[in-house]
Image 1 (cartoon, helix red, strand yellow):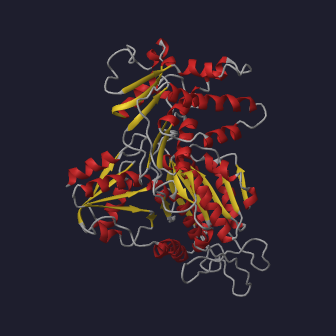
Image 2: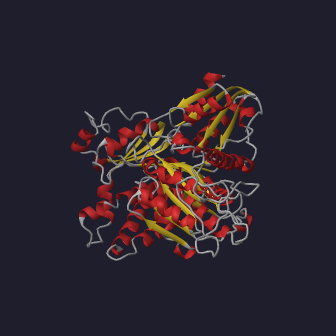
Image 3: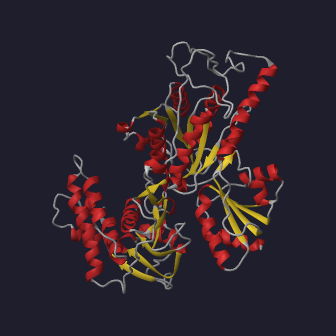
Length: 589
């Protein structure tokens, strides 16, 4: 279902629609088939207008078995279309889904337009000419048959998916699946058209997107593109060390395909080794990056403190997932904010940025690299599973429009101090190993201000602690004024960070349209915070802060600004719906 959903989204993006997606799948590689816990789904919302979320409910559901129907039915609008694979509704599957009776035979689905189709029989019939396929192999093409039917329903072009099928199966031992899958896709389209199964079809015209070249991108790909762009603009090779972990593994996988762009990747034996390699590459003069999720970030934190002590430029990406421990590996959450800001031993300040949309991941990754190199500091980027896996059309920027990232390795021997300070940024000089006359000590022991020699002097330790903190505080000068959408003052400010952006925006727009005094603001910088944030919050009677945690940013803001932030929390492994945020805001009006 992930492939089918992704192909529908890609076809819609190429057609010119605006869209937003929500992939949802179990943690197991092979989840128990037919069970409620084993459901894999892919929600797509596409439109001829600007949209911001995958939608609170759905108009069309394709249900392959009873479990899929039971899990997804609450999302379907009244009179919505349900396309049911009758072959999946066996007695065994009904029992696995906890159905006492077959919902296709009683009044369970009376509120909907139900279309019962034996996708297995139809697919096998369509593929009879492919005699080298086993019955099981032919049956697996049923998703393509169903996809073809939905393509007809919404006038989607088949060509992008046909091209994808041809490329995907073009490898030894897999070529025989190219033509059968194409045949199944076309047969589903023709079946929907010829049988007049649906009373009508729907045409969703292209959206009035800003002129430019677009591609359908998810958040992890956005991070990859942003890091490569930063490498190009800085003139530095990009080094990435990582260890596979859901939902961040895609970053390692994609970067490994860009060796031609001076990208070097290393899959290490564990998270600690990956962090150590990242530090080594930064010391050696590369744009150095690692990525993980909450459990892996926890393992990296001791070495990350070392990078802060050594004052080396690197980027750490955290694609957050449900925790604690292994938790919900494939579900989204925002529960690593405190970990990012406070999760290391000692006074270990670090800039922290958060992405808000899949396309925004490009901008944040680029910005994080620029800040790391300018201020000689590690930087943490917070994404999440919803953004990392979800997609949207992304306008590819012109390289000339990207901000320059100047990098200057120190080469002058005279007057060199390994921990001297740039008067503007407080960054120390970057002297790479092998530069004659610039040999110096690095490591975890405290350094003497200026010389960089090991020092146990108590006053010096306090001075160095303040240097590191003040350097991060000066990053505030890089933060633009916070944008408030809606009135500059009023009854309610809906404040957000990370992947709550789309739901907050949709909810706020509806509330404003209803005449309410509601505004919204979204924070990209979490440490340091924007300098104008406190004044903005105090201009509103109430501040509502939705978070996919138990109120971490709310707690942070209450302590810093003494503002009674109202926290809206959700811990279900799912993003907020716009309706949930709208209802909470109405309660404050």
